[in-house]
Amino acid sequence: MDVPTSLAGYAMPGHGIAPAERLLGLPGFWPAYLGAVRGEPVPEPELFGADAADMDAAAEALWDATSVWPAYRIPLPEGRVLWIVHRNFPDDAGTDYLLTDQALSRERQLASIDGHFSGPAFSWPDLLTLADEVPADGEGVRDPDLRLLLLLPAYGDADTPVEEALVRISTALVGVGVAPDAAPGLAERFLDHPLWESPYWSAPGSSPLSGGGGDSSLDRGSGGLPRIIPAPLTPSTGTP
Image (cartoon, rainbow, N blue to C red; front, side):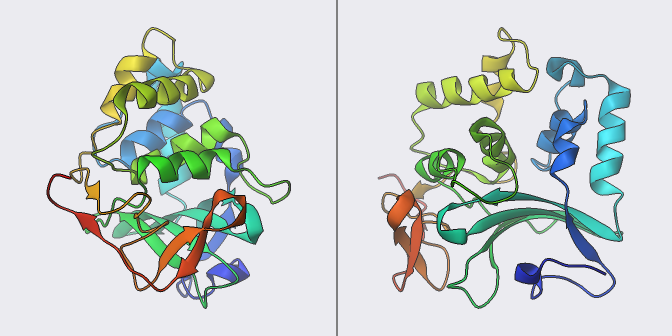
């Protein structure tokens, strides 16, 4: 089975991994993806300009691919890539958010959405940085609004500026077919994750991507994206 070299340490015997950004063009992709990876019933597909048959077809393409797992690449500056992989084990499926970087010996798992979920991975500032800092080259998803929607299920931040977030998420939803009058209400749903409570990060940018939750933390390097430094931080469970 073919596996991207950067994910060799993550791959499992008998299962390939293949870029599948083409799936984003399926009529029912967004209701299938956003509902399933949030661990709750999908929004009505009609809100996305799709129907139930569209959503079922997209769900089959995403979740029934057990031999070769679909993956989406979000290219980042300095050669980094954030991978979203549908880990389609027949009896233990999930979605993993992984960072690959030449400075890392293997991929770094940022979040996992399955029966034993781990997350969130991104604060609101991190989410915006990842969506907007599109490098000059690099294969994968390059549209900032699509990047934001793909990463939204792994986000959580109790300090999110709500009005700003509603405008930004609504704009992205309209871009994938949601009616402008329905987008704000749908965007509001995505500010509260059904799998975890949004944390107060212990310092600005202290998410697993840019400052905490692992054996190393990351500060802002050139291009506005993280650089690995040895100073782990973790979310705070209390109020600031």
